[in-house]
Length: 194
Image 1: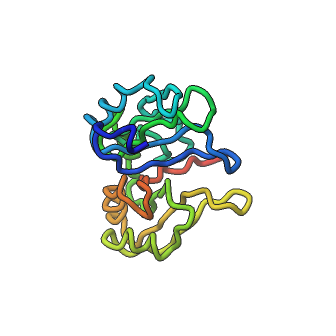
Image 2: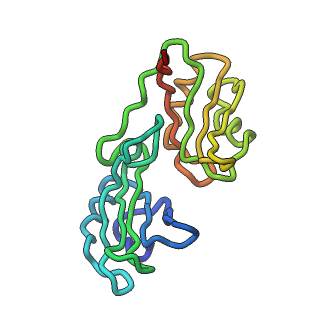
């Protein structure tokens, strides 16, 4: 993929999409700038390993949680997939903060909130790594991982001692942790159920 995109700009990260442990024919590539994305988009339809490649800007996937994945949160990047499900036709692009198809604004902060959402975490992340990542923001009082059926889902919630720490943490959105561009967002107020 890097050879295919040579001349488009710097490839910062490649993430291959797997299904049931097998390559799905799709991938996400982070590029260094919006100009690089435009150059990559111009390669749409060209052959890679004798197959036409489809390249598009990654789109927001209708996030169910704050700071969910997709270019709505990110920036320079083009998402792509092979036009068939063969072993080639991998695409380009996921964004880094600040560009792309309208960078997503953080969720408005609830006054007094001391909690942030962290998403797109490496599946091998531990509390020490998260505390180190957030050390300049303030004192972390707790970390809660999101799990489903005992499996870590790559996201969680972090509580701070002081409310201003959340603003510092949200400013880290898009920063690298373990090779992944981490989503950091304010947690919206919970809805009261009656």
